Length: 66
Image (tube, rainbow, N blue to C red):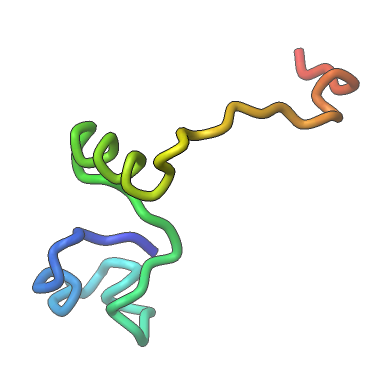
C-alpha cells in the first residue's frame, strides 16, 4: 500500500481507501512512490548513489509479444 509521505496523513487514512479499510499498520508501505519528479531524483541519488542499473532479462530475446 502506498499513501502520502507526510506522517500525519498516514495516521488519518480516509475510510473508503484500501489503507483506511484494511490496514493494521499505518507506518509501513508495500512500495514507495515519490510525490514529485524532483523528490524522485533526490531519493534515487540518496538510495542508489552509483546509479540505477539498466538490465534485461535473459528470456527477453526468446519471447515475442506482438
